[in-house]
Image (tube, rainbow, N blue to C red; front, side):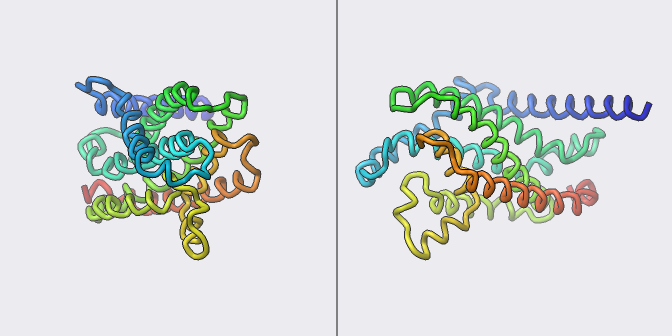
Length: 259
């Protein structure tokens, strides 16, 4: 009997998350002329800028277009989901107060909605990159566990940021300031070999670097990424998730009275 109740409860939770995710996707592209293709146009615009400004500066980079694009689609997934989810608890105050839905479902639904957009963008990317020398192989399926790991890491970040933003609205502004700095210290437009010594150390202190390196290795390199790199990403994703979940659970009982 207890198992049956738990199964019903789990199905209800999945249905709620699905409904919230669907709502987020619909609202995001409501009255939009090109829909989800906006998610592809933004990386494309950055890629064109990179080609004009940087491509000739880094002749050592094999297939610069593929190199830059593979980094951009991962970066914009992270950038979009954090920007959208950071204010999701405050922005959903009416639903949280009126409906019996666990608060954690709101940032999770934002993540799932953006993950859906990421995979749609990825399909377009894989088709377009055919003309720029991408090699199709079964190794490309490794992008699925890579995206899952990056999603776990991103979920930890948005749980942390969205919960703190309930009490300190400056978090949204601070994150908008920090995020461009993270972009520039992540080797997306330039090769990581460009920075040496203590500057290389700064890059390696940036956790996003490892996920982009993992995804880029799946797309660009002739062999699969090393187990060492996979382990790094697993550890980083796990630690970030537990930090975010811990802070979120510590503060969630005060959300309703604060918002």
